[in-house]
Length: 358
Image (cartoon, one colour):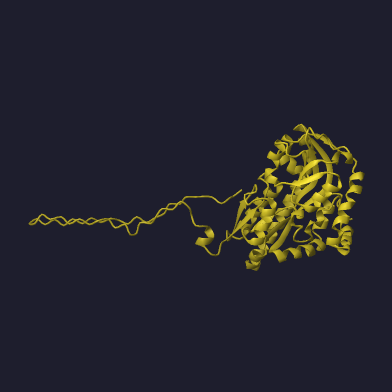
């Protein structure tokens, strides 16, 4: 993964120093010429960015909250490679993983205000700006194929248009998998809905997921993902909920004992770029970026499906105890979430979503 570096290039011009000695046999006088240092350039520790040296080069900053092991990071590196290769280096991608630009909320706000060019984050994190978070509704999709069909539909494309008002242009939809619940040894396993009662659980800044946890009887609290591992280690939370690839790749099995396969919320992730930056590109550059984004989307989805299917066994090998609670009671309780959001999303949109999802 290429990240902005501090390559120290020393370049300068050393002027030759000419010393002319005129020797007068009769007078024996010698004339000294001092060194001319006017043309010696100052050595600097940092290169100017490529875009400063060549105004035709665009440097695009892409940030996200997870580390390099995450499927979104792997896909981002592939996106970087394709864009730089196809543009002949005129488009340069700088990747900032692991929350270098802050929390998911900070990343989205960075795109809105222009301090960051691109990000990829859970759809629910965009819910304050548009109806994009509707894909996170509890138990909306049966499997990956249904979820991807929905995310690639004209309906979602229509919803994405709402984000342009906030300087956000959606290029593709990455995948984060279906969210499941992990708990500490003290909290015990989730085997039924009753085990969710008063559970102190960490959630992301995702109102749909928070309302889902509340409807199931838990007590959700927001915490940045970058702080999650340490918070669980310090027993600040009894539980957390995330997709299986995230649980494994970020070693949450080291600080949680039980995994409940609930698949309570599908976690789509819009892959976005600043709308004003997008509008500054030529048609050819837009085509390069769009094609690379779709290829990266395909890679990300492939990795997430594979990891979701195979990582449960790996988590068990790491000592986690896996449960498969009966989800009928969970689904019944989560209907309250739909009632909660119906006034803001509107009956017409809700009906279209259900029709498209089923």
